[in-house]
Length: 218
Ligand code: AP5
Image (cartoon, rainbow, N blue to C red; front, side, top):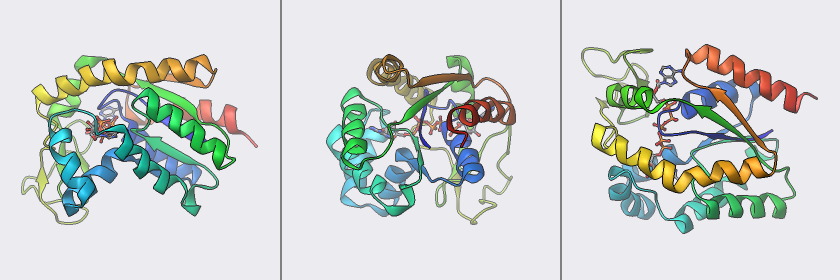
C-alpha cells in the first residue's frame, strides 16, 4: 500500500499516519518531522530549512526531492509506505511518480483529510510539541502537563515556531496556492479519495480504514 495523506496544515495527517502505520505495519514518512530533526541537529539541510519553515514557506523542491529519494529507497519501504507532507508541489508529485516507476513500485493513492480553516487555526494555535521527540500535546486530545516536561522523553514542551496564528495563516495560503494543484494531479488519474477530518480522531480513522480496506484488500 503506497499512500499519500494529503491535507492542509493541521488537518490531522500526522495523527492519522501514525494510526495507519501501526495498524497496517508500514512506515510513516513525514517530511516535516525529517526537516525538524535536521534543524534540531543543525545539519546542512537543517540550516537551510530553518528560517523557511519558521516563515511558513516551502523548502525548495530540489532539497525535498533528494531527501525523499534517499528515504523511499530504504528496504522498509518495499512493501508500502505512508507519505505525510509530501508531495506539496507539482514538481514533487511528478518526481515521485518517476521514482516509483524507476523502482518498479505501484503508484501512490492520494487520500485527503478535509478540515475547515477555522478548525485548523484552533488546532494549531493551541498545540504544544516536545522540542526533543516531537510528541504532540493538544488541549482537545492530550493536554500538556503543567510542568511542560514531555511525558514520553522528559524533553521541554514548546510551541512550534510555525504554530503562531500569523504563520499558520501563511501556511494555509501557501497550501492553497502551491499544494492545491497536487489534488487535481491525483484526481485526474483517478487515484484520489477524501474523508471528513472535522470529527474525532477515531471516527476519521474509521473512514480512512474503510477506504484502505476496500482498495487494498488482498
Ligand atoms: P509539516 O510538519 O508537514 O506541517 P503541516 O502539514 O503544515 O502541519 P502539521 O504537520 O502540523 O499538520 P498535520 O496535518 O500533520 O496535523 P497533525 O496530525 O499534526 O511541515 C512543516 C514545514 O516543513 C512546512 O511548512 C514546510 O516549511 C516544510 N515542509 C514539509 N514538507 C515539505 C515538502 N514536501 N516540501 C517543502 N517543504 C516542506 O494535527 C494537528 C493538531 O491537531 C495536533 O495537535 C493534533 O493532536 C490535533 N488533531 C489531529 N486530528 C484531530 C482531530 N480529529 N480532532 C481534534 N484535534 C486533532
